[in-house]
Length: 132
Image (tube, rainbow, N blue to C red; front, side, top):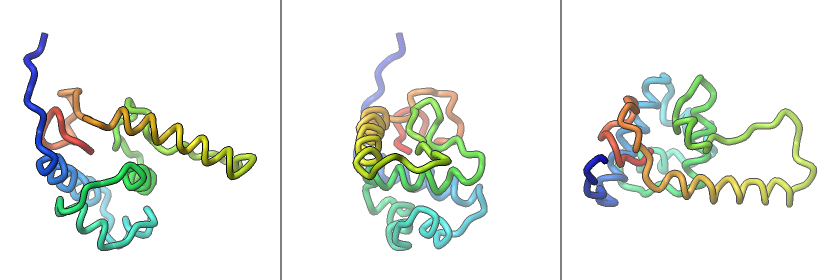
């Protein structure tokens, strides 16, 4: 049995998320402006997230994951099941898309509370307990 580690503070998690987001964006070779465009988020939000000044919301995480998915991405880890599902054909109705999105968001919220429990996850700074 592994010894339990103390839970990182919310500030530490927010800062580590920013470090990881910036590293991943730079690894893909895209600017903050491009990431903002791809994720349909404000440029200021991307900047604040990378600086660790803003707490990411679940919808922001999903948008960022979708924006970073343009290249072969492993962020968030595929094992979380939180990658946006892209369908070649549109859903039957807006209510169906909304229900599907809500279920996916709820599942992701549960799974992303603490990400990084796999110590072999090399792309996340801070080892276990880092939120990405």
